Length: 107
Picture 1 (cartoon, rainbow, N blue to C red):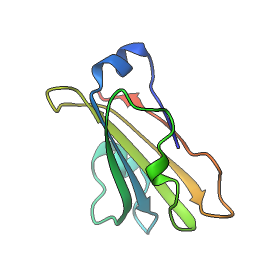
Picture 2: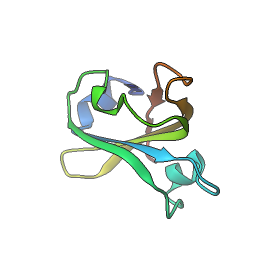
Picture 3: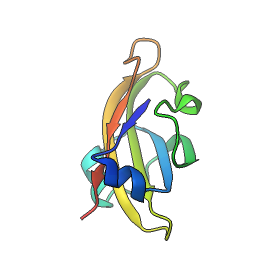
Picture 4: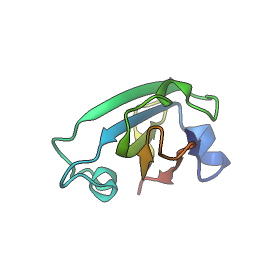
């Protein structure tokens, strides 16, 4: 998994990155995760990383097969949400070999 920051300022401001692998179920989609309206979703794996971190996140490399939502957010040193991103991908043996999550500034 690769997390892509929008610019160098974002990399500098973010101090903690949280990444979630969420089972895709009815009513759960990236838009709802991004705007904070998703509820009742099941997290398969989760990791919190102190930044700066390596681009590859190895602890999330072995998730189950099937459709998954990969959601990430970053907080600054004051624990304020500054970035978030989400992507849907097929995980597992028949899925994508490298998942990319592009973070966006939180407005």
